[in-house]
Length: 108
Length: 122
Image (cartoon, rainbow over all chains, first blue to last red; front, side, top):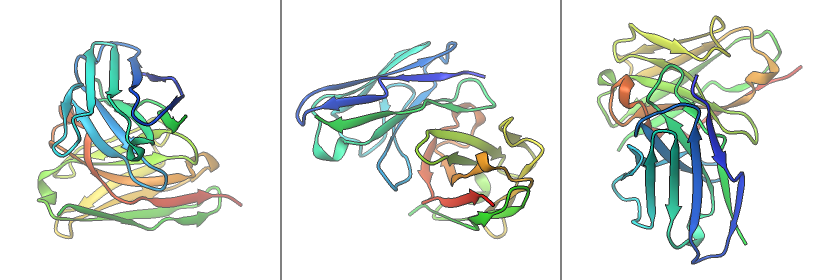
């Protein structure tokens, strides 16, 4: 089973600043990685797949990069609506399809 | 518009059973593999089970294997999760999720239901 580890657990950022979130896989997942955003009481929302492809309608301030075992989600200029939990998911090696434990982006 | 509506959650005693349903609309349900994903209170997402478009293939997380059974009725556009021998650690919000592409090799999810809470407690 591939273990996905996200860091940091919590990221405190001021509005307008850049946020950089990390996701590490215990073995290579190629580019088969997705990122989700989840707000309290809501279902997850798909942001990015293929490590770097934004879903239609997702703002350009969200970008994904990486391959193999190291991945990054960058939010270039945080807006108020971006404060949420972000998690990664690998779909390269299955079953199981595995998620990271999430990074909470909070207002500094 | 794609919609996934889960139902069937509730409070159940340890060792008990529950059946969750997920009613799908807005897409060709019979063409898509589907999945259940759960989230324990304050925790991250955990994939639970998946089923092929025809229902002929199913996969389960080790944590639920032998206790949970996933099925579907394509004539009713409905997904099911039969949960037996429930444990306290099964307490979670259960989401049904639709993959963006119906392929095990691209199994990430572009639509999720609102979730249904299962609480296992005496």
